[in-house]
Image (cartoon, rainbow, N blue to C red):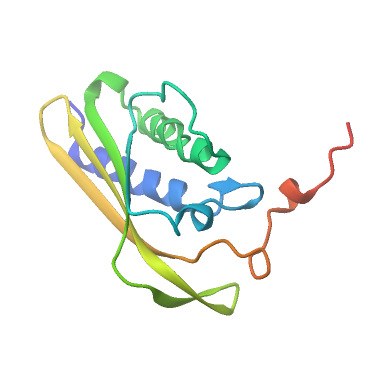
Length: 152
C-alpha cells in the first residue's frame, strides 16, 4: 500500500510538472491555447487515449498521463497501487487581470485538480489555481528550441 506522504508528493510533483512552462505547444505555453474554449476538461491519467484529439494542443494535453506515470515511477510506486487517477482542468467564473512577461493581460483563473484512489481505497486530492491568458505571440516568449530551424 502506498503511503500518504508519497502519494501527496506524487500529486504535488505532477501538478508542478504539468502546469510548468514545459507543457507547451509550438514553443508556447500550452494552456494559453486552450483557455478561451475551456469550461471543464477531465483526463483519465491511467488509460492511454484510444485516439488522438483533432487539435494539436489537444494531443499535448494527453501527455498528462505520461507525466503522471513518470511521477509514480520516480516515487517508486507500482501502477497497481493506484486504482484511479484523474486530472480536472476547470476555468473559474469571470475574467481576471494578470500579467504575462510584465505585460498586463486579461485572462482566467484555472483550477488544476488531480485526484487519486489507491489500492487500499483511500482518496487523495490536490489542486492548484493558475492565471492563464489566451495565447498572444506578441507578449509570450517562445521556447528557443521550438523556434530554431531544423538543419538536418
